[in-house]
Image (cartoon, rainbow, N blue to C red):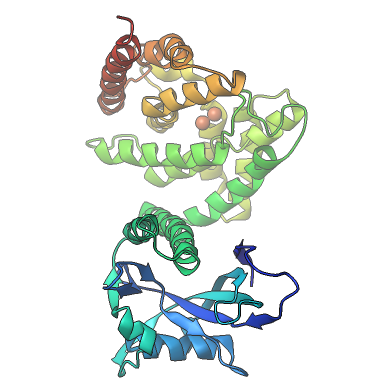
Length: 407
Ligand SMILES: [Fe+2]
Ligand SMILES: [Fe+2]
């Protein structure tokens, strides 16, 4: 099991005898709530679990301890390793000794059935009760409050750090689930497969390389794949907003959007070709290999190849799918994302950048860019103008806030 972190109080004689007592703890979520033990007497929280007896398997100990403390029954097949925390400190039962504890944490589920709780003496003394709690961050906070009031660190500090880490793991999991749901909602084509393919192609520019490849020209960590996913979201949004859908081919638009920047890897590596042109053969090969007919393949690859020709947006007879792809592409990185991007650039170029440096950059980039709208369709304009309004209000307040001290 991977170690999450270790805690060593160094308050013992290093040559003293070592007493070891490993433990197993459960991170149990059901319907968005976590099963935790709450000490009513002291106000702190911990994950259910406890010591592993001699000869006992850690997972058996987990099942037994959860049942004894909470009355809930762990489903054995649901047990998944998370990580361990190692603790070393003075053995309170032996002033010459060292107490060592490896704490194994597991994700697991519990069934609907319940058994009788068998609390230990100290659990009765501390008035421990099992509770289903919705926000781990609240428990982290309560534990911190308890520590500040002089609560005994060690266990509580360990628990709050693990809760903090689990909170992030869960957040990421929910984000990924939401993304998977969104991809399924796009429709019947194998969009997930296409996204995975584009990701694999773009990974070469996102993670490695030399001579500018891998480091974005803007000098901060910009992911071309994340951009592609956001543009996909904008294409879908624009499509859904558009009445009549005249001239639109939904699936073709989605696929072209997924592939639109796939050529970035090659153009960055070779440093010559336009990335739109580089994307054409990559898109074509993928679609033909996946059973698309030639005509449809050429049409979609053509959208990819033309997506950079932004001057065509104002041609009255422009293909509606191409126009929508271009508008979607423009909508990403603008508005709030533009402001944050400006900030990242300022910071990348100058470690000691100030609020005023940022203001300067906003005033030269995102702010004026918002007033130079490339949008053509009413839907594109509506989304763009919404962003412009926000940037305008942001700039007003930002200016006020950084100049208010000039008295
Ligand atoms: Fe592009
Ligand atoms: Fe793009």
